[in-house]
Length: 229
Image 1: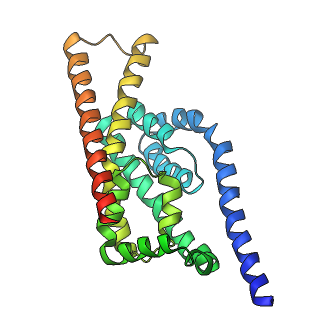
Image 2 (image 1 turned 45 degrees about the vertical axis):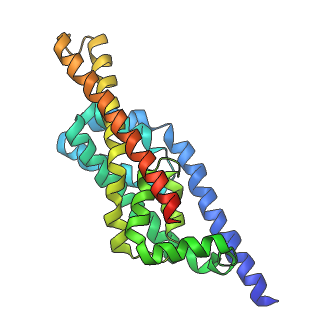
């Protein structure tokens, strides 16, 4: 009986931690626009602060799409994609390690009773890097929650981090979109001189191509993942 109570308390504790992080994320989301403005005025220090802020936001369940759009508007496409990738990778690794060491031992006994999780865990144990890469490429699975869920599986940390490249297509799409929105807003505010028609054509074609490629990759990943599992 005492063992059962201990397990229950640990399960409740693990769930409480996740709920607190999710609630904190909702509150922190309101500060994202101000954070982006602050970063824009700080140069290199702002870039470092952005990476750290993105990592913290990932752990705290703050929607990454807001910061990713801001990265495109503030840093441009290439630099914005790099900074978002670094911040997301750091944040997802922290969340993964938190789940593995602070939550896994508390809820694994209960989760293991579900045969579906056992099959998923077995598949990841055998082809962890490939499965997690497909999970990252597919937009069906919530990014922040998936980081914690994967901490409950047997995937190696190294394979988990390498598979993070799967977030690049979606990251590029949002950064690109943020760049377009940022340029439009800057021109409307008079901060940036009006661009030529050729600039907007190139930017528009690039955005459409990025959208098309991202959708294609996501579909292939979703189909491959379904077959793999």
